[in-house]
Length: 445
Image 1 (tube, rainbow, N blue to C red):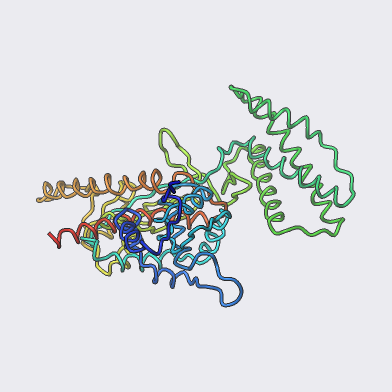
Image 2 (cartoon, rainbow, N blue to C red):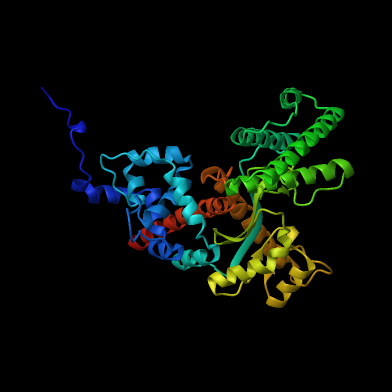
């Protein structure tokens, strides 16, 4: 009887060097060779535990898992499934599973939470630039622009937001009353649930229908908030911190929407999600998507390599970040910026004056009379504008399409920032790795 040797035994140790050499030849190996692992581990301050059981992943492996998440562009569950059967992924994450199989996909989010608490963008980006500076040409030339990396939230209409608040608070109050043995307040919740479901199915939601439903949901939410306060005052019961945070968020939502409904005034710091109360509307002015919900990032790019200058979940005017962006680039490169490309929104009088005083050439359309060398200046502006429009704006789409930044699925503010950070620098690491291979090939030739 013949035995199928393919299923007998596959010891990695016998062919380790051959498998590792093959791993380094691929794109994942190029990312691996471009990352300064020891410096990053030291900067994050992660290590093995001195007492108790060690982590399944080493400090290097934990960082590797975050880069791998964005390279694979998949969910945590699928990432662990692929890690079980892919030797290249195991090399990258500094782990050898053999015949073992990981089943706890939540370990990815656990590591993400750990690293999010220790992330210092400026110090880590300095480490990355110092490791990559030999592959970066013309460090005194930069381009800058801002984009929004959207969070995974449903579109927050007023009625949806109020209903989610009502629904969550109603369920919590029922549980609390059941524990305390107290009678639940009368609210006609079922009636309003059916009414909201009917409203949500309407193809054409008239103004009168929206106003009527909003008024009813505000009254119902006010009743639940007052009843929750009464229970808290009359009974000695403690909840977890998340409960009090969510209650505070719902109270703020009620106040914002009530004031807006009564007076029609614009809401400042509008809350759009009860789960992610830190997200604010970012008005972008695009035809397809005038408003986006997520983190706004001002990026500076040096020879095609992107760095985060400023990240915030509140809207900010990127034109006011021009000087800080130049300073960020100079802090990384230790060289004065000579050429800076930016959108017309950056072309304020303050920024123009700064560029003139520092002898920085830009692609800003000049004011006043044309200088003698205006033709040469126009050609230079065209080159700078092309660099910004192709490489920088192209990197926005590449990050969102290929490095898992189309919708940020993290659940907390710090985790979302970490998600964006690793997504951007996974693309950077691949580009640096390809440049190293190309330089080596040229030297050999």
